[in-house]
Image (tube, rainbow, N blue to C red; front, top):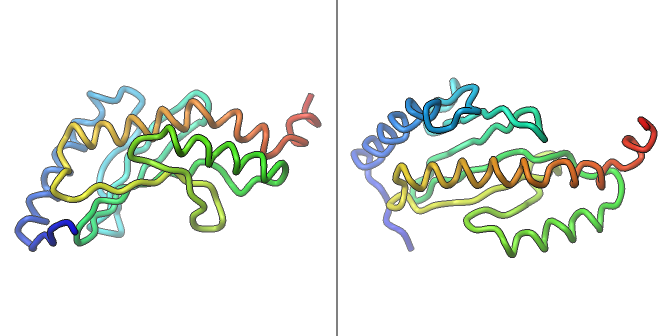
Length: 155
């Protein structure tokens, strides 16, 4: 089991995350905004502009032992549900540090978790990059498959 961080260690780590987020615009050119959640002191967000998906918002939340991260990918598919979920499960095997899951509102999310002792700038960059790149690479295909009739009616 990972170590439980005391208040001093948590404060230091929170400052480290705040400082890293202050530099995110420079290292991630698609960044629209980055910072603490206005309503929750233990939660941060990074919002990125994409090409496949207009915006990807990544949430970070500090727990007692881990930093959890997630991004909303798409709503629950209306069609080809088994095909979409099989595709997501197969992709889970190839992903490192993240996995597809059904989250709030039965929506599809990418999520992961990192022990607090491993939270360093390079890992935060990897997390943001992995979530963003995964959504950008797979969003169009997932939406077209999960909402096929909406796309065929538009043509």
